[in-house]
Image (cartoon, rainbow, N blue to C red):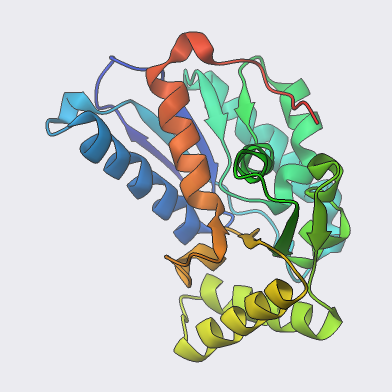
Length: 245
């Protein structure tokens, strides 16, 4: 499914490769619109950027990590289709598929914003020396955050906590947001804090749908939305990607 919002030509055209999951994609879109409204005073249709969203139905990497080649193929096709639709840069509201970012960047001529790179920049900006991470098993196992954090200590859940986190993510994907799940997730966060994590990264974009505001967590959807708006209104500052450790 492709949704095209043609709302004006004042800014860079935004491409969003979504569907991982669909509700997180909708949340990113809403956050972008809200930032334009609150920070830039947007109130008419042509006060907003052009946004192209592809909701990509990839195989579930939470339950079926063995589908790697199929996932990679669909991601390459998705970013290439966005470029063909005239976007100036691409954002992907999913932490897990950041693992495939090098290949995706090589496949297109426009910049792709990394939710992981931008979150790590935020962690460093905050001056944190230790940070926790909750997310999918693939996000944890591929160490996509640890590879960029440098000297910052990364604290992750134990195997029991990870299984609980996975079940919570799957329920959120199905639209089932339980108060009990929020409590469990907050308990996991508390445990990571007891291990001296200064804050905990919500490293799956489903998780901020359950914990929207917390002084102890870092909301990766919010970080990505802010970055998209920044790049959109300051196109001359947009670079082709990459990250300095």
